[in-house]
Length: 399
Ligand SMILES: [Zn+2]
Image 1 (cartoon, rainbow, N blue to C red):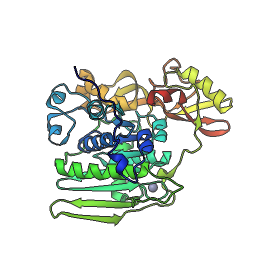
Image 2 (image 1 turned 30 degrees about the vertical axis):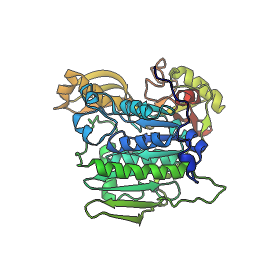
Image 3 (image 1 turned 90 degrees about the vertical axis):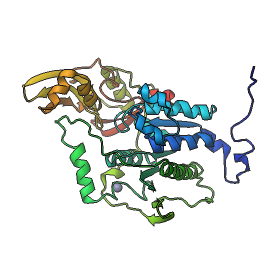
Image 4 (image 1 turned 135 degrees about the vertical axis):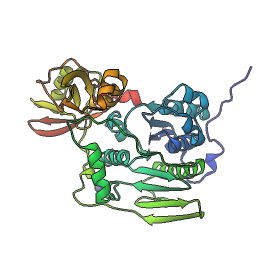
């Protein structure tokens, strides 16, 4: 029989590093957006450092083609179509059983509570599309969090660090890039099926180099201390670029912070909604929100994810009752044979609700059923103006 060793992770190893603060790392909370090639490397390194609580978000399933550059995936995971976030979490806790890794299978923008963004020390972006970066940037800026973006292509890669007040992804977009994003995210009443951006060729080398740099920058953010001068130089407002063909690395200034950029809106006014949870019905939540905000009228604004009750096809003209948040519509259509076949020749228009008050006809649905994730922050309109209230009753799900 094996006897278990009693030890503390990193004891006698990391403790030799002058800058390493064991308690800070152990208590750190890091959100990793994306569990692909970069996400694998990033989570592996965070686990090796002993970062106490890691949250991994990804909606995708593992495919055979992922195996060439994803250190935490196995062949069997691809055959079983396992979710990337779940497998990454499980394997990282095998590497370091003293940490907690919480997987979230879902969309970053509409299915991760904003309270979680507010509660972490730093966010690491391991994404492969502009739209996802644009959306993640908005959330991080709103929460006042630094986010570390990684990108890889062929033998090259780059790390960019965005921080509120210093640099913003949206400010750095060209007019053309911005219009392209708007084209793909806009148009409220038409249902569009998610199209994947073209697959980019990458190697395990660029993934591990860029992922490693991202975690190194994250460790610097975790160790930030306003009372002491930092021993580190960070990449805040800069881009670090690695070029494997020629073995060159370079640092560029990359800061862009324009006036009137809509991404700079901060939700610093957020009130904690003790006892408020996404598992409450709309009726219960409206009642509680009135109490918390001290107002007579409350209307929840579904900013990220509207509630769709019916979709209507053009040809033939037909109505389908779906009762789903917008973010779930795409996979719902793909799963239903009738809708999937129709989707090739018709446009679906949706009937949706984005302002939820006492007139909303489905009062018995829970907040989660209408598309508000657990531990989210809801924006409400009241007779005294706009308020932001956290579903603090769900915080224990993320401890
Ligand atoms: Zn901006």
